[in-house]
Amino acid sequence: MATGVDLLSPVWSHLTQIQPERGEGIYLYDAAGTRYTDFTSGIGVTNTGHCHPRVVQAIQEQAAKLIHGQINVVIAPSTIKLAETLNTVTPDAIDCFFFSNSGAEATEGAVKLARMATKRTNIITFQGSFHGRTAQTMAMTNSKTVYRSSYQPLPAGVFVAPFPYAYHYGWSEDEAVDFCLRELDLLFKSQSAPEETAAIIIEPELGEGGYLPAPVRFLEALREICARYGILFIADEVQTGFGRTGKFWGFQHADITPDIIVMAKGLGSGMPVSCVASSKALMSQWTPGSHGGTYGGGALAAAAAVASVETIRDERLAENAAQMGERLTDGLVELQGRYPVIGDVRGRGLMIGTEFTRAGKPDKDTTKAVQKACIERGLLLLTCGSYENVIRWIPPLVVNAEQIDTALTTFEDALNTVL
Ligand SMILES: Cc1ncc(COP(=O)(O)O)c(C=O)c1O
Image (cartoon, rainbow, N blue to C red; front, top):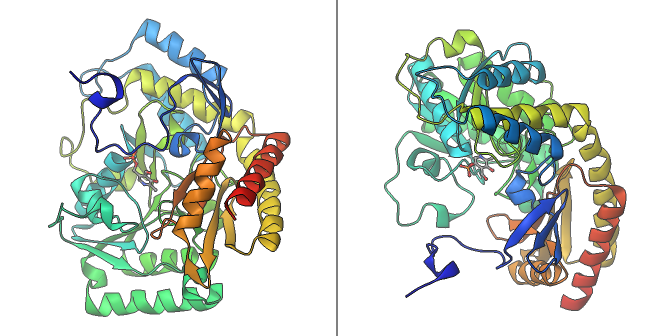
């Protein structure tokens, strides 16, 4: 009879077999007391660090009072508090909040809202996007074929425009932006006319697709195009939100306000909670009852989210992400000078990618070998990118300078072992 890990579905891939008993800040500890440095943040979730005392306290207090009420039946005070708290960190124009459980669920909710409000059918996404694994969001995900293979046909009405991935094209950022704007215009002429396009959805920094910040000029041009054609601009802030990129929201690097913001991950510090946010005017066009769910906006997750947002705000974690991100980037750029296999270092705040290339071609083997060598040294790092040749640097936002420097030393040690 199978026991232990063998009872888990093989559909889950596992970066490691580590079984942490507890977490604190940037560290995880297993039963033997071995410490691991978590520069994955549980895939971009624990922005406040593992088990931040304020989040733990909020969960404990809420659990003792009310775990589940169900929003269609009663309204938990912590759910209202969450909406009020988010209202203080979103642009003035965004003042209405719908809660669900996962990033995919919220993204799919945003698409439903956009379709109903505009009475249009089509959605434009970008090459390299990751929006989730439900049927609708799979159709909008183009970072790797593994997320789509064997599940076709996927829902229709999704069109993919190129993303200004300057390093891949071998162009300057401006050349890449010009090309992508021309191609988007062509897409409007050839595949999805503006008047049938409900929304354009973009990650302000592509996550799974390779840690590629969307150039400011590109974001501002998209905003203008959306306004011109009555298309809704959806910012997928699932990974970029909650201070990750050095500002509270990833879109804030540009002078834009999205029509809809999709949030998850950092919102709950590990409790399953996500959100679709927009203006009340837009949200009012969503027919009551046409969307919902049993758990969305649940009392316990909402309490954790309130504490997470307050902690990010009060401890100025976005500012810390900007400062520590600069330190990390400087260190990585210095290493790039000595290890030419690091072809590109990019990203905003603490969402940094190092892309490995040899002779101008993606180098997945070295990427994976360096990742493995880091893990053997107790530093947990994830990879991303369609070619799986990008190491992503995504530590909790509570990380300090000494911890950044230690991680850089470990990374160099790993490079020396592999190269
Ligand atoms: C940008 C983005 N959108 C959506 C999702 C899907 O979120 P979830 O895994 O919570 O469904 C992710 C997950 O990695 C993501 O990075």
